[in-house]
Image 1 (cartoon, helix red, strand yellow):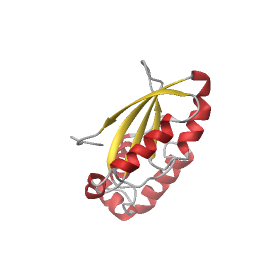
Image 2 (cartoon, one colour; image 1 turned 60 degrees about the vertical axis):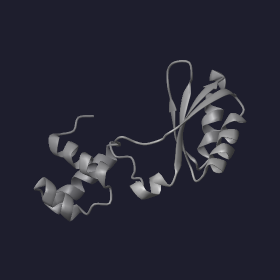
Image 3 (cartoon, rainbow, N blue to C red; image 1 turned 180 degrees about the horizontal axis):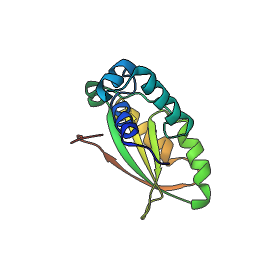
Image 4 (cartoon, rainbow, N blue to C red; image 1 turned 45 degrees about the horizontal axis):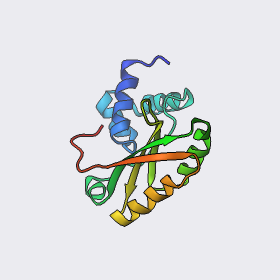
Amino acid sequence: MIIDGKDKELIALLSTNSRESTANLARKLGMSRTTITNRIERLEKRGIISGYTVQFSEDYERGQIQAHVMISSNPKSAAKIVKALRVIPAVRALHAVNGSYEMLAMVSAESTQHLDEVLDQIGNTDGIMKTTSSIILSTKFAR
């Protein structure tokens, strides 16, 4: 899908703060609020913008324990694994990856005990053969 430079700027602003008012977006882009609203609606209808999400503050994120969980699985179990992990709230994202593991789960837990429970849930999921976890100590930057 082809988008123009103003759409790219709009997407970048919405990526930073999806709740920013159309008035502020219009001011930053030198456009009218109606034009901004129309562009957002067009981007949504074309499927370029498929939803909006919550970004947590740095203070909240610092209070969470985050981990990457590499998952080795039976390839025939992929759909079942995705379905099972989707219902675990602490699993914030699940990616298919290449290499010696098939999937990468992004986990955010309230405590080490909670993380341990989530890791057990993941490891006990049918079709998962092995997991390797890495706790994130700090984030140098995020976009």
